[in-house]
Length: 57
Image (cartoon, one colour):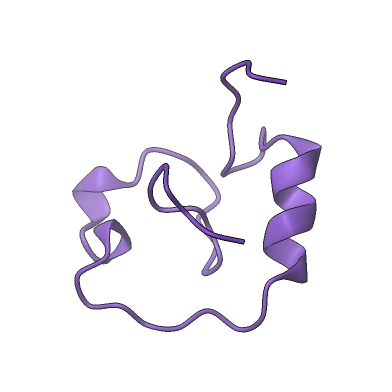
C-alpha cells in the first residue's frame, strides 16, 4: 500500500489510472509543471496526468 509506483504513462498503477479517468475535465494551471516539457519524463503524456506528489482526487 505504501510502495512507490508509477502514476503516469503506460506503466501507471491501475488505481491511479482509474482515479484519473474518474476526474472531471482538468483545469489549465499556467504555473503547473506540465507546462514545461523538460519536466515530463513519462510517455504517453495525457492531459489529466498527475503532475506532482500532492495531487488531489
